[in-house]
Length: 444
Image 1 (spheres, rainbow, N blue to C red):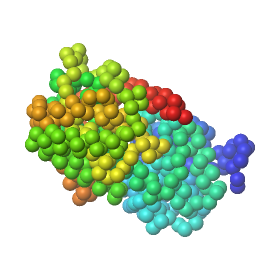
Image 2: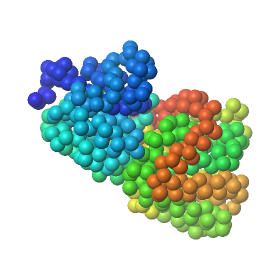
Image 3: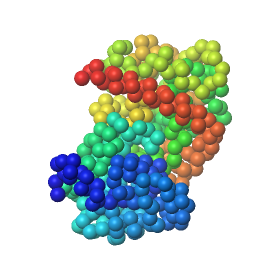
Image 4: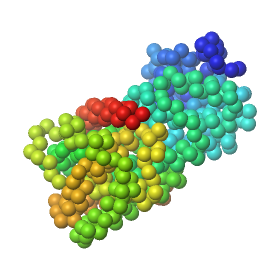
């Protein structure tokens, strides 16, 4: 059946059932939004949680089922909203119960293992149309990128899925699974590694940076808020992308390599060599950016501080973590602006922070001078370099357990500040995304 009118849409809402397997944060977001839009939605989580879940969500606009078999037998579009680490075994468990002729998709951040699981365990009569909303569950979906992957589909199944997700008001991008994985690695792997390493470095040096006078200024606020925002989420969100996506491995390893090489030049005092290397990076990545194009500046970011005491003055910083992001992109041949259409809100901020350091007049030169000649941040940079190497090893060997342990320890260290940090971080992200919209509109 074609979907070409409001009547067709209403008929579909009456006749089609949407199934969601996995009621984590993103699964719950989808269940609520689809239910509120008038679709009949059924959802499940782990079977042992059914009684608790049924009571908890009894007033929601979706129905609960005991397990994925019951969801799979009823639903016309089934979305697996589960951890990338577990997608294979969960599809193997529930896939054979899939309703005849249904459409199936997933929400994992890496599509290679997801598609492999679907091809292996789903009946051949099913269509495969996967999704990935490129934002967290607490972000307004309006205007955010949503990738649709029509892997095994026809015109009607793709139209059906497009109609369903239209209630999210997202910017829909259609990609293959391979394109999706390469682009998400390009836009997320290195930047996640940077801010994960910042958190671990602060933990291992036993300092809350908002209580330390040297971490003062707008750019420091952005780094602190982003790092805490990541650690306030669930570990598997980042582990899935980093470990299951082969493209991400090379990038995280390069980030560790860039960090180590830049830090080596710093402690050797090789200012000119460091300058030549980073100026080459700047020309490659930011040749089209001038001061008027900058997304961020210190005046915008200085108000988003967790510190309770008034700042006495900004202290020059080497910004090793940010320098290494750009150095990694350069060495990998990645131009981050090529993938803006598939960028997450945090990536836009990562990119804005990196632009800020490299393109604010005199700031890159100041960072290079501090890096080579000022020992104030030397110990912090050492902790950071070790943290980046540690994450790279964990990801290289694909060790989910070690990843979780390192993440959980750091999460526990920062736990008392998450509520406040998220409130301030949300305000910061809202301000920055409004500037993104303004800047993009002036270029159209």
